[in-house]
Image (cartoon, rainbow, N blue to C red):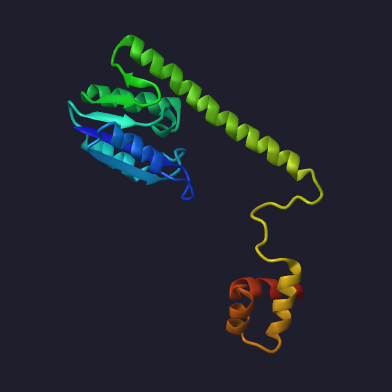
Length: 184
């Protein structure tokens, strides 16, 4: 049987292109999840690994969807090969259980891990540079301006939290935090 596996790292990302590619490849059953690849506990992937048996084929769209590190990739592929499972990674081809196939897989897994590490490093460098700016603020930008929050706090003097929330769209918890900041 042909099984497919699709994964994206965040809830905001879309699985659709991977799912379509796996359907086009003829996968009879597709497991998918929105889960970071840096974690070893990927529930859908682990469930998929538990159902694969000799003669089955595991199809994945890209190598970086398969494993979180080169070591993890090599251990997983070795287990699959020992169980007689074929592996087809769409952006690189069928991974053969031959010395050459395993070598190519090892090298490409190393490059995938290197690429991910470089992305993390560049992100950290960018963040370090940004932190040097005076106006740098960690985290998500505020949804409401200081003026909007001040207006909402003024409304609280004569209205309930619920009324202010309905009028301004600023949640009760945000108003409470803003109120606390004023008293501290």
